[in-house]
Amino acid sequence: MAGKPKVAICWLGGCGGCDETVVDMNEVLLGVVNAVDIILWPVALDFKYDHVKNMKNKEIVLSIINGHVRNSEQEEVAKLLREKSRLVLAFGACACFGGTPGMANLTTKEDIFNWVYRDAPTVVNPKGNYPQPKTSVNGKELTLPEFYGQVHALNEVIDVDYYLPGCPPPPYLVMNALSAVLDNKLPPRGATLAPHRALCDTCKRNKTKPERITLQQIKRIHMVEADPETCFLVQGIICLGPATRTGCGESCIEINVPCRGCFGPVEGVADSGAKYISALAAMLDLESEEKIAEVANQVADLTGYLYRFTAPVSTLKAKRV
Ligand code: SF4
Ligand code: SF4
Image 1 (cartoon, rainbow, N blue to C red):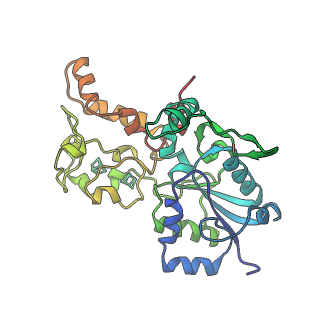
Image 2 (cartoon, helix red, strand yellow; image 1 turned 45 degrees about the vertical axis):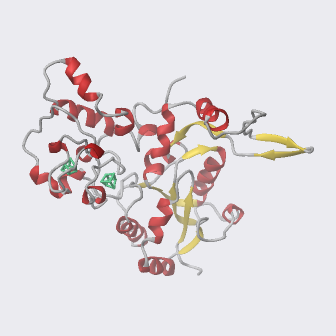
Image 3 (tube, rainbow, N blue to C red; image 1 turned 180 degrees about the vertical axis):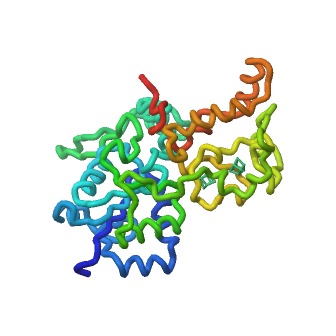
């Protein structure tokens, strides 16, 4: 295997879906495996972190890192891979933006621990034990990773060279990214390896949108039978397509579910939730502030809807305590 570019694939805080998308490359994956030397892929291969620690700095050509950082072990692995890699790709919504686990930033570490280890109805914890980074058992010290106060996107912890969003990213974009690395045809550092347009630009329902949409009420998807051909917004259903980067193949729209924004903000937009709320405000055709508040309240958990994947990198970032 000497001479092949060394590649690491690693999972920090995530659900495993991003690793699944690599497997979903099917027979294309066999070609990739032939072209590169995979030196770490914990979900599939039994390499140890010590193996990576013993490598030279920058010996790995590309580390593909999925998942957010919420504890000291994840931070340590991210920093190790950064030290040993020429290029780091933040892979998937959690690595790029914090992802759905980033919604936990809207509460505190203390509240999470209290719920999980004390208050949830299924908890049986008569001694009130909470996990600690260090615990002494029979004279021996046991350690657990330290749980941080908030969820971090990968670029809050290490320098990231490229981004590939999605929950998970589709296999064709993974293949494009790997080809760009292998053929040395990468865009400038810091680029997102996905189209630079909004989802609406590629959505086939876009042709059903009038020049100006006006809304007098907001409906939730489970309350209506959505027409499968017509733009969700025209039907009064929130769809984050106008503020979300395209590249997913409109996978949710294709199954008649509105976009939730897993590809993150479109190029040049720092906060997709803020961008969307200003677009939504322009669509509401209501005369009084009370009426606007009433309609806004028809969206259960507006913050959660707008920042489902991006809270840690948004202007909200985390609950202040
Ligand atoms: S708002 Fe949603 S359904 Fe409408 S065109 Fe954009 S992506 Fe398609
Ligand atoms: S439609 Fe939106 S939420 Fe669904 S996969 Fe595409 S970007 Fe993600």
